[in-house]
Each structure stands twice: as structure tokens, then as C-alpha cells.
Amino acid sequence: MAVMNTKSFFRRAFDLYYDGFRSMTLGRTLWLIIGIKLFIMFAILKVFFFPNFLKQNAGHGHEADYVATELTKRKAASVTQEPPPQDLATPQEAQ
Image (cartoon, rainbow, N blue to C red; front, side, top):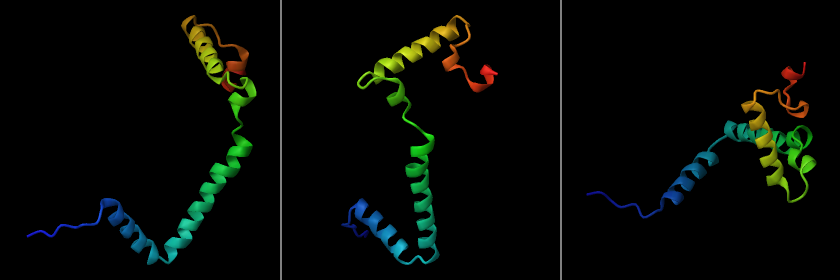
């Protein structure tokens, strides 16, 4: 006869991870390194290398209009086989 486990799935999953992390020695150091790397990637690099393009080019509250306009301009340029405007050209096309 099978015994019913009264613990919920989430409680059993939590217990599994809790017991696993509690007994780790080297793993804690590795998780600390992973955490530091994620912080650097998402907090520091985003600020310096990924500016808010919409905030710079679209007015406040007009982000959707800006995106729609840019998409229609690019689609029209690709349908007519015209080169895209200079501000939309990729670096390879600009050379």
C-alpha cells in the first residue's frame, strides 16, 4: 500500500534545495561567483553599454508611435528595394 505524502510539491522542492545548499562547501563559493557575475552583467554593464534608445529618440508617452513609425519606414524601404535611410544603415552598409 502506498503512503500518501501530505507535503505539497513546492514544500518538497524547497526542502530538496534547502538540504542540498546546506551541505555544500565548494558550491557556496561557486554560487557567490555566479551571483557576482550576474550583478556585473545586469547592473553595471547595462548602465554603461546599453542606453535607453527609446528614451533618447521618442518623446515621453510616444514610444509606441516611434516604434510603429520606424517599423513602417524599414518595411517600406525593404519593399521598394531602396537603401534604408542613413540613420538605419548597419555599419557594414555605411562603409
